[in-house]
Length: 458
Figure 1 (cartoon, rainbow, N blue to C red):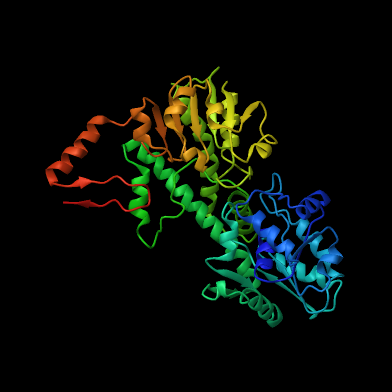
Figure 2 (figure 1 turned 60 degrees about the vertical axis):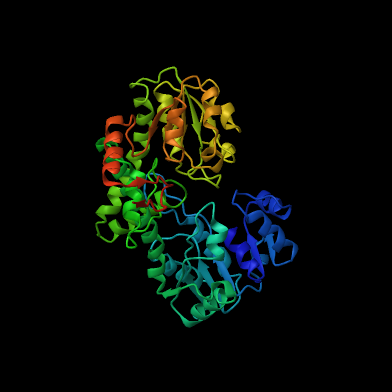
């Protein structure tokens, strides 16, 4: 949806095809099948301009097309760990006899190394060799900011094996002045396929690294937000993806790390760091439930827990591998009753969670609960009125798994706070020692938000 709409925004004529007739009919009427900020306005604008159309007819979609993108799902095969490529292969077989000569078929789906080679064979069984091209053009869109990521990307990666595909894709991405200063990386097809997996595995490792450091911070009395700032301002490291939390989720990181591991196994290569990252992230999600239990001395049987935020991240309705799911299920097994709030994800959450009371208002969700647990960094949760929240809770217990709330303000209101990467009950003597040391040195300390610079000056 995002790719097709943004290609149209650049002035191209785009047809989006899907076999789900209800989805296509909804799009023609302006109903989005997903929640993505800014997408509905772009769809409406380009559909009205005639540059963007929707159909269930594949022949209609590819007729006259010079470039055909395959953008179907590649979910993890249950119990296998590798990517299910059945939808990719099906799409290739169905379009093979329909495309015109000189067409470039581009795989935008995230696929293992060598998938383009297989598609070359599949399409080649219905067409004369040399009359078509197969290329790779992986997407690097983050849910919640996908439109801006597409229109202003860090880079564009193109994997080609012939001059036709190279020329056609360069022309496509060079057609807009917005990308004139964007690096376009042209590689072999297999390298492009691997780049997507490698990028996601690296980011997943970075998240897991800071989460493990957060555990150490809790034990030694340190603050992971300050630690992340201290290492992230090193340009070699960078501040992005250094926010400690309940573990990564979504449609990419979990399945892509597993698929990369399976590819490595198939080729007899050991990726120990990636393997440990996947295992540590699974354990991380389970540990978050224990963090809630520890706030009640190991027993939550019969208690009511308000979970604030359900989707795997803010600004999306995606519940795939969301940390909230294992957290809630674990709390339910331990006897907790769950009330849950999310601004857009309730419909999808209800499909994967049973026995949960859902609310569209965070304060209503917190009513008469024994604790509030922050799981997703929604803006409505960041800006929640702590005093009002306390009035609705039966017990003033707050577990912030995203470190997005004002801890000091919450403590002043009488909350018992448990955050990630910080001591659950800060030692006042340690705090006083730090303040006294600053006074002796003649410094004043300015507390700032994470990832902005804290300056100490005389």
